[in-house]
Picture 1: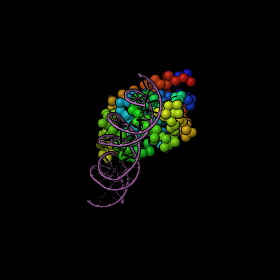
Picture 2: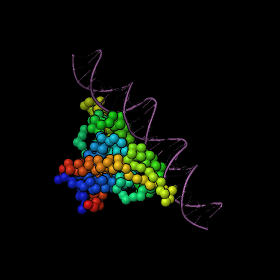
Picture 3: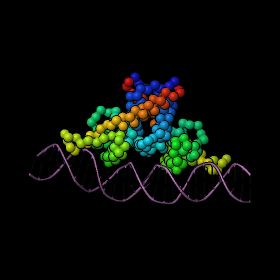
Picture 4: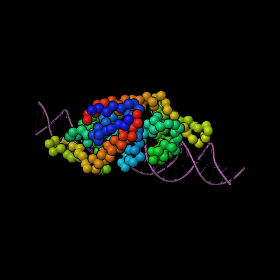
Length: 116
Length: 116
DNA sequence: GGTAATTGTTTCGCTACCGTATCATTTGCG
DNA sequence: CGCAAATGATACGGTAGCGAAACAATTACC
């Protein structure tokens, strides 16, 4: 089932959810960082630096820095790939899952408040 | 009418739309900047620096800087309030409206692609 | 008229991000 | 074995964001 949104609904949903994210943002993530985090948790693994860089259309240092930041926040974890030690496998954490769960709650909540 | 979203739908919608925003971002706006832009265009005017700062829960220089950046991109325009010359009235531009129109299209598009 | 309050901007020192280029490590392959 | 390719991290110079504090301009109020 698809979600049918009117132009007004789409922007209002984005606005109210973004507003609540900004107001209550404990971590103050960049749009890119948020995108990386969502990708790691929503797309089937494995996730590598190179793969993420290609998907987002950014350079590799962007991914490395984002992983540094979010890693120190506990939202993400890095592990060396034992099969191919050049690769770094990016893994999920409990704290990251909780963060996205809260984000989902905000979006659902604001969607519920939408008036057509 | 409200928009009923499942947790999975909410996060997938956010992910795919954010991804397309990052991939194609001509302007590379911050989450805060995007929020300010949406607020200006979706909430009835007038909009002032102080009002925006209070709404977003940030300091005034954050708003000033965001208006500087987005102003030089043509997304927003500043005017002095003639009634009370201490105030700055933030106004919309054609280019800003087009930018948000494209954002709305992306969200609608990704909502349409959602599978339950 | 003169002082206090209000508004938006600027300055300051700092931190974080950007892309390019380079590096270290590991693997692939002749 | 030896060299090229691949992967992720780092160095570098530059830009932009941050909060706190100070500032100029305007208005409110006694």
